Length: 152
Image 1 (cartoon, rainbow, N blue to C red):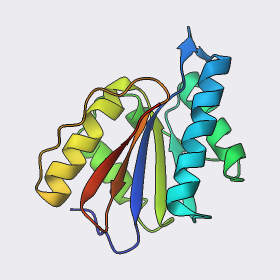
Image 2 (cartoon, one colour):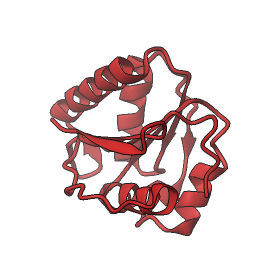
Image 3 (cartoon, rainbow, N blue to C red):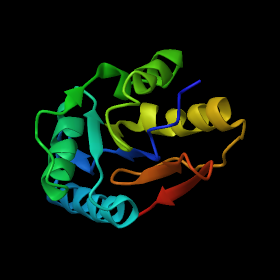
């Protein structure tokens, strides 16, 4: 289980709408909108930004980083591109003390599986989170053991 004493919220975001391997202008706007929602929820942070090692994820994370005034040297991992499993849970566990608000920008395999896996393992609850579209996310509130869809 993840030690939840530092993390207040975990934001799991799907990369912005893209064509081939590059986010489109609409994808940039989607990520800017998500960053605004994150700031409304978490204020000035502190944040820890993580992303997949795929170009769409990196570009989306760059938009989030600029909007939240974060450094562009965020961590990249192939785990945020794949279906979430125990390795992905451990990956987040290992970063629990980096900030109160973790932001993980990933791809549909990851974002569609990780919130359910996390909530089941950490809170003992099954979620009914629908498949996320590009430019959407989930805010998993550690304090309230609840989640909120960040839809377009």
